[in-house]
Length: 263
Length: 289
Image 1 (cartoon, chains in turn yellow, cyan):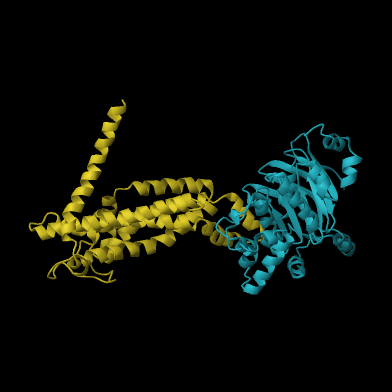
Image 2 (cartoon, rainbow over the protein chains, first blue to last red):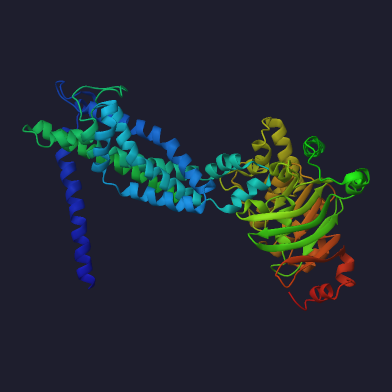
């Protein structure tokens, strides 16, 4: 039994090791300065527009989603009746489970006709995917703030709204930040919604959300089937960059969860 | 303190919400001023369950009043009625009147926030704010009430910590987290935090039950010192503690409907040596509870 289980464990780890090995070895030869500063049509070519496009899309989405998500979590945890909470949690859990291609199709049918094929439509699509993560994680963190902390504040003659913002949220701040980083990490790697809403471009786009933009998942998608080795190599490089970014964000989340005094 | 009091009074009076006492208003006013707190037929509910039944009592200013009685007799609930914390739990309600300096805390135009400013509370378990330093904990009530002046906050922090007999132990580490202190120190920090907003009354809900004997003695000593400036009401399970710290003792018990009621209230020495009621003497002699 023991050895069968060990064998299964090894079998489970093999794909991960193989993935890291392949991505890293194939990407490393193409990691040069041009990759980070040049665009696809420059000579030598690079994927700067995809790197910064991804960061712009995800950052815009997180900026839009964080206030909404955190306030929704505050409402559910501090004010809503148990009935409202259980129904909302059901809806949020369903949203968490919606496949990203479905969100992409929704954005394509509903948002793209309004905003066009543009970074803006992509931000909406990624935002829809991030929102339930922010709400749910923030809610969990707020739940960890002990009732005694709220009571202490109320008993000092602090109004409920100030207690919520300056005491409860302050106590949970570290955890809320973790929720945001987690959502950011998820949004960074999303491909399906971007394929249907942003589509990608060869040009660099700085902060113009009315037109199209490039993103790393789009680069990987369109470059991996290319004929020349440089283009394929850049797809591997983009894959490595995405992996490393996600890894760094996850390490930050881990470190924060271990150190935080509340969560 | 005086201005706070005036605001609660004037707010209630200006809108005519003062509990109407008809023609005897003047007499009532003079009478009421002799007491820091006066309860008239106070009842507290959790949903339909009546946890406190018809309690009427009077508490003299700058005194220490102990609420004693067996578990479930409603003494903690009654304590939470006195600063309108009872209503923060869902489904709860209060009947009757609780006069603070003659003004009903439950008058229709009294803001519960202001009531809690005037009637502070120390809880069973020390509950400093976990992400705040010792200094920030002490001044949290003032800062959230909008006090910005750094010198004022520092002054209040020192005075409050001195009054809470904690200053000498923490003066060199005010920026360390409040939770880094020992349990007894944390409880004294919570007392400092409570008195920093200058309440008139300080409620204590079994403040020593989570502390070791040495820390307990320190807090008890502190309670007696605080009675010089504040009216203190303390709930305790520990009868020795009640006899050590209080001047007046109120004994509560449970009736057939499991509602807590006041059996009797008298000078502490009297309650413990020569109470009027048989039930009280049985309880203080340890025959039940």
